[in-house]
Length: 223
Picture 1 (cartoon, one colour):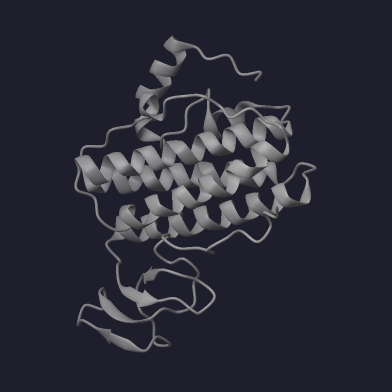
Picture 2 (cartoon, helix red, strand yellow):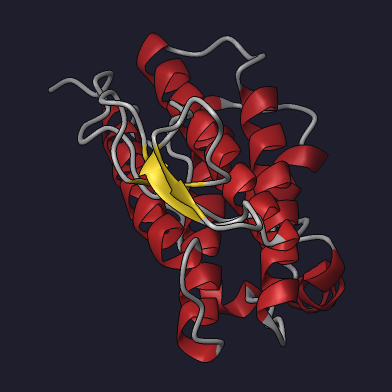
């Protein structure tokens, strides 16, 4: 691995990252942004690091701030993202990175700041996968990165709705799994309160509207 970990730099970046998500400059999306010569090994390492950091951060928010949805749903999706990436390390003979995600935790002091943290983190994660998809990739790696980017785009929507308090519960279409979060629209069949902010009914077809679900198996990971 060409990245050299610096303890002092890592400590500084963890403190600084509180206002810009949990991406740091030495692992995950932060490192990918600074890397001007991406290799397949680099991309797989940055991807798995970022997914593990997201999982650890959302678990902290759930445990320490009693965070509910969307955190409880999205943390499950992070497990799925990690499982999609793992077989690629074996297939392409890439060493699995060793790091302690707890060393990079940002510790928000409220749900409001946690939601903002989630927005910033998912924006950085999406940008990372967009940069990866510009590279010359094996087909299966490309498809997994596409799936991961799509999942993060839906996580971002869920966090953005949380920052505005615009929650509702619905059901997504049959091609996606999980409960939908978001305001019900005229096309949705269901009830909503007078303020129009909370309602239960059929989702409007946006995939993964609370960021929780996904496909049971990524179809591009073949034995």
